[in-house]
Length: 157
Image (cartoon, rainbow, N blue to C red; front, side, top):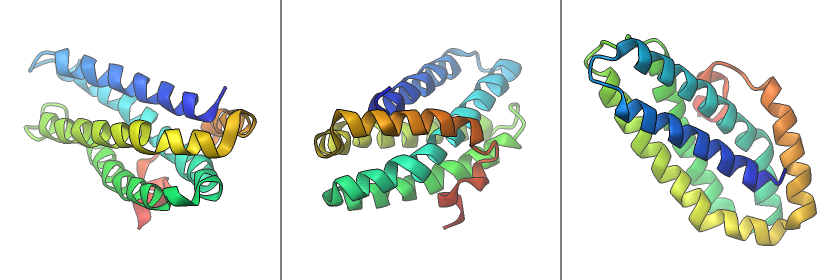
């Protein structure tokens, strides 16, 4: 699978989870906790494979995307800290829904920038063969991704 397609599929998976969360009732604490846990797993893995494999390759192939990559890493930093806080927060806590809401806004903004502003440039610079190689590497790397958001490199900056 093409690396950009793989990342977009991850984006769709997370967006579906966000919609489920938004549809859950105010008092659906168990359901919201379950959805949040899936979001934490998905985004932790996604940010890890982007930072370990995709971003370095994108910077090499399309040096003009350097600023996009650096901004994305900073956005990851904020998202990963929110994920780590959500991981330990009771779904009945009054801040839980608010924290999820901010997370969803941030991730949607991040996805929009990636998909519209710089994935097209990276696709042009890399070509199909290189993107397919990257996709295979990222798919395999998902199995090695940490389960802890703060274990992703950008969380430490």
